[in-house]
Amino acid sequence: MADHLLADGDGRLHPPAAYIGRPLHVLLSPYATTCFVGALLTDITYSRTANMQWTNFSAWLLLAGLVFCGLSLLFAIIGYFTGRDAAGGGNRTLGLAHGVISIAVFVIQVFNSFIHARDAWTSVVPTGLTLSVIAVILLAINGYLGWRLERDPAVRIG
Amino acid sequence: MRARLLSTLLLSGALAACGSANAVTPEDQLGPNPTLPDIQQYLIPPMKVGKVLGWKDGEHPTAPAGFTVTKFAGMLKNPRFLFPLPNGDVIAVESKDPGLEGINRPKDLIMGWFMSKAHGDVPGDGPSNRLVLLRDANGDGVAESRSVLIDHVSSPFGVTYVDGNLYVAATDAVLRYPFTPGQTHIDAKPTLLTELPGGPIDHHWTKSLVASPDGSKLYATVGSNSNITENGLEAEKGRAAVWEIDRQTGASRIFASGLRNPNSPSFYPGSNTFWVVVNERDELGQNLVPDYMTSVRENGFYGWPYSYYGRHVDPRVRPQRPDMVAKAIAPDYALSSHVAALGLTFYTGASFPQQFRGGAFVGEHGSWDRDHYNGYKVAFVPFSGGKPSGKTMDFLTGFVAGDDVKGRPVGVAVDRTGALLVADDAGNTVWRVAPSGAAPAPGPATKVASR
Image (tube, rainbow over all chains, first blue to last red; front, side, top):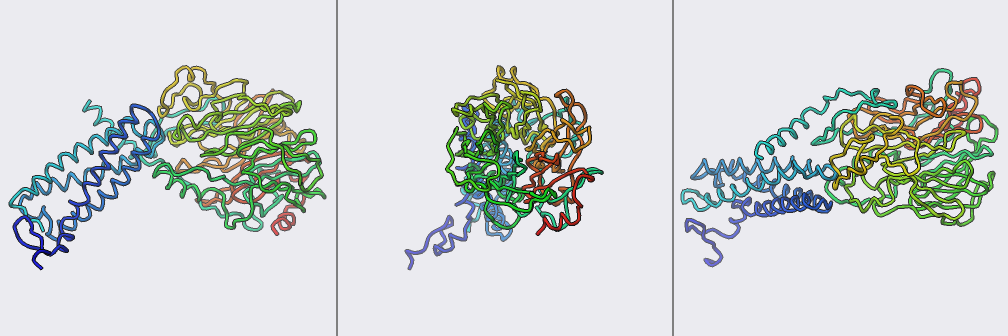
């Protein structure tokens, strides 16, 4: 049976099912990031071409990104309050910053979706594009924080 | 650059917060020189549509003192437009949105649901997209008999009769049917006179029709394929325009353009000039842009999409076209913002008091893009010497009850007796308004009609 067990960062063994209970947001957030980076790229393309398909692309990418981002936040918050997740462990400041930035990205992209619901040029330029840039910058910072958190030996995962 | 980004963010936040701050009132936007506020782009545009209740037995819209309103015909299915024939019969065009507009982005899902609440679909899914002949043989102001004149037309709206032919503007073509007034049914297959821009998309789908006074030309209105080019400029070819069609050959050309959603072209009595009512663009503010009526000049350009009300540039359109903006004609007469003016007829009867002769009745379907209703009535604009000569007055009201909607007026027409007929699509009724003295006793007439 031992080969069915998986080791975590501390060398402890868990049955695979335990991994499903582990930070699901880590699994989901890359999808959100991909969508939001995609939306930035299609926003840039629209601002250079005024071809309406690109702002439509952005609107769908923002919606999909919000679904993944929202689920990811939900699991992270549950993890936080049940004490199972990273932020409840070692580096509290880092963990909280990571969480606050994630919430900020979600809120910004909700606003951005409404901006993208406008018709034609002003659905993107200037406000929509601006929000997409800010969101992606925040995501990059958060990616770094998340990486630090995972590597932090003080942080207990699982 | 950073300051610019920050101010952009703050601005959008502020716009979302101060939705109701708007100094201009709907009344400031009636007449030749409407007050135009600054553009306001919301985070969530104010929207309000009512639940459609329909009319109970005995209920009817309200006309000024001295007029009586009767139900000329009830139990129709989305009557949109009316055409009185020379023999006194009245054609009511029942019509439905062709529904060709796909889901291009998440907004379309929400708007589809929202608009379906407002679009006069009182319960029941009876047949529509047909022309119904209404006959009031005994002249009591109630159509006691009706028949399906033409069935299965593709979202018809406009209809006109010239010289043994009935011309019907379906959403994608002008069709010609051989017809003699008095006929109650047309079996003959139509001849395709001219194709009009229809699907795909077909955002503004109502094509209306009028014949020139000498009968040689037809004028068909074709609305834009979007609010403001969000379906791409290539989707707008031949749209937001009035087409001139040779009645004999079907040859067509663009007579005037830049008219976002023009409807109900009507020749001013005794002139060779026709007027249209036009629905202007949405989502620039509660009191922007006013809908209007205007005389239509040959080869005139009226702004859409590049500008509104003359040379007010719309920032949502790219590429911008200063050359087109410079050509844009300011329309003649504003009807207030988002009233959705769809019906227009000049009063050519003799039974109404003198002040109404030659003036314009305007059917205002009613707003959705505001947090307070505007429109939902038939307005009257007095004319003298072929030009509007005074303030708009409310003529037929009572279509709104609190937040709920009983009906929504669309097409207006003057019948053989000089009474005003109003197609109410949400209320599935044709109303008849006549001076009280000349009209039949209101009580029994309403009762009979409500069967």
